[in-house]
Length: 446
Image (cartoon, rainbow, N blue to C red; front, side, top):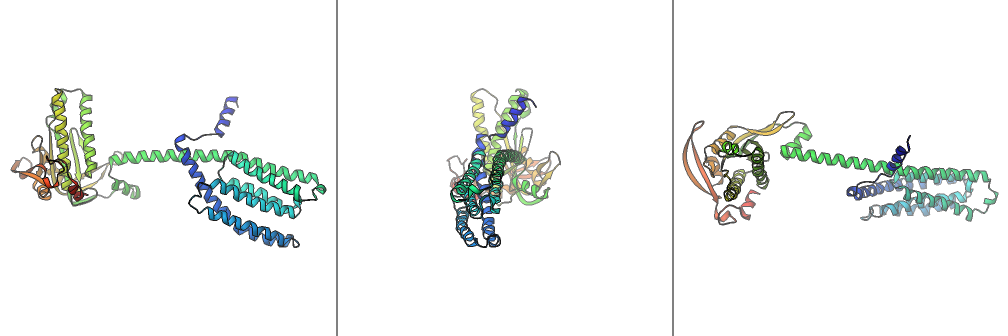
């Protein structure tokens, strides 16, 4: 292996998270530490008293002293456990972890000194505490090494201070035992680097997956309504729905083909995108569902997929705002010498069906005679007007100034009753021209 590859491997051991997710990772690690500390506390509260039976069997002459030590350690462990349930537990997770394992180690060290020092069977408990710390806490090298070194130094200090017979030790056994402890410390410290590195990479991977999922959900949300997405995620299909009443709105730019012939293709797309982007915003504002665009035509529906009783009002408000927006753009176009884009808007209210069609490029769509009549309202309307059917008129007449157009003859449906929506009635308008709904009307439509 080349030196470059070795350096890359070493550098990979000290992998650093991007700054934007580093703080979130630290919080996650502390949360995980709190859970692990609680678990270790409960285990310790169970095992520490249980090992009192071992004191009685192995050291019948000293069991009272040993049990007394256990009785001193257990309340401290219980206190640490209680602190993990406090509001600030996550902030002091490292302190609690350090205190827990030092407390456990100090108790074991004290019992080791009292029961033979290096020859005591309790000596192995120190390795157990160090390894338990490695499993429980996702600490980095510095914290892990500091904790195990303090445990080891405390052990040595108590041995040499309180065990007066250390001069009679079999020094090879003493050295061997400490080699085992040093080996455990080395393993724990080095593995803490690897373990933390794995945690970081796993966290970063999960964040990337989460971000990709959010992107895919956002893209899916641009195609399908949220209730439809929710059902697709659960059932992997969407059952067609029948709506007793909904309102469909169509728009179309008059003479678009001739206008487009005089413009560059990119300018045509730019103008359409500007208009339809605004239409999308108005759909969201008044809770309509965009269905599709066909060339220069825009189609949306109110009252679908979530039914409501004010869908016709929502559609009418959208029509008024679209008309106002188009008039404003035409004023700008006229001022700069460009050709104006006149618009027709048609609205009809009635029953329809809705569902998802297709497998690869699926889309949400609506069907029924209501859709056909709404399209006819648009094509039979006048430039710059909002043409509505009798059904829509009956649903919105308390709130809008409406002009009766009369009976209009159509090729496909014969004679139909039609109306023009002029503006919002003064009592429901927030401006003199009746283009913006006031708080009263907005509360009505929710």
